[in-house]
Length: 582
Ligand code: SAH
Image (cartoon, rainbow, N blue to C red; front, side, top):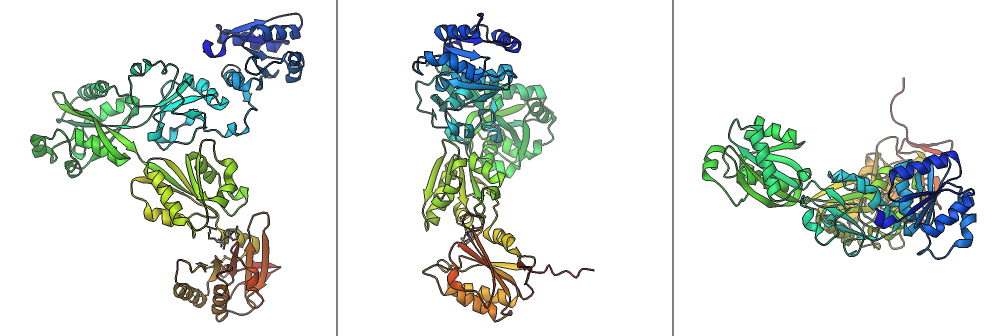
């Protein structure tokens, strides 16, 4: 690290500052020089002249007063970090992008203080590297480089990343790219164990290496095989192809071997799960080295190769045999690599208010490297979207294209969030997307508060008993179908929530629907309508079936018509729960 930081001058004026300075010197003996002078100001000025960076255990104000007259240019001045008396904060004061932010982060590791970085406000929203890919099973090869590379990512320095495109990972900020050829910091996602071979061009040293769970080891054996024999064979199979055991997802074999002690023990010793498949499933897998002898015994011409490939396919989109069958006296092993499945999160953003957006929806938004949605909804959450996220915004009426884009991105292996207002499954994007989606992606629906629920809470308790949602949009549904449903709801005495109730082009449907309901319930039946529920210009109106003026309703409104039992109580819309209370 000496080459990146150079010499760090440390200045202290109090007893606790001097103790902390000594702690730093002990931690980074090659870098730290503790400057002492009768006056702290003199020590600070000397550090400015002779060091590449300064840690000042003086107040920010005191430090700035001393250094202000000496300020030159940020690229040539030393970086300055001030640490407060209680070691709570390391404030990057000067030269943040030139080592200051990095130093503030490094101090955390030694002094336990929290880095305070003010150079780019969006940086706090950056995907943390220590949990990068953790939900996919990634492990960090050498965690000691995390702080160093993490600081570079946060500081906006160029960081080169390789191997991440294959995985549905969260975004990293734009300074992290595969094209950053001359970057001093590197992130690598690989199951390859032979790092030496990547060192020849000089960029591997100090890289942050993640081990993805990309490998499935297939194993077959004779009855009574020893754990040592299986373990040795498997270790050799991995080593032969320079594959890292930390990237093994599971050990796969045929159902018949589910109780084979040697296999179970060899897997347990390496921390791997064992999965088994029926012989018929394995028989259907095309393999390079089938055996008729094995078929006669087990019912499949291949166990090791077929189980590896089948397991990799089960956990991924596709599979490639990276180590063909190897044999010992009583066992066989093969290794397959999987192409990871993409992810589609379908995320409801709620009716509008930020505090009705669920923490899970926020997490799903920030987990995605591609976010797809209608422009106006994306605007609602733009500040939450992490730097480096690809945002695909589209206009009204492009639902099908939006759904197809989201699914295509997920099918290509990415982590995608398709967002919609309210709940994304209610008159929204979830169904068109899932109509296009194959089984080769993982889908995660994140519920949101739908307009009817937001509105009903503003109105009182109109949904206390059975109710129906009906969309009055006849753009994609014939009016006859809608009318039949309104009639059924009227006859069934449901409370009815109308979505898409009325637009300039569709102005007769709402009066028609209300007339159908009015034939089955009294004129004083409560009707509530809420425009822009939980948004800044929200309006809430409670009226009756007889009094409602449809002209006041538009597409930003949801309309709730009570059942024959609903009534207004103290100005609130109530549909009785219907129990007979004792
Ligand atoms: N997925 C959305 C519904 C989309 S359909 C949801 O779950 O809420 C669009 C219709 O929803 C609008 O025409 C309107 O009737 C209703 N709507 C959506 N958000 C609303 C809000 N904040 N206030 C009132 N009505 C709303």
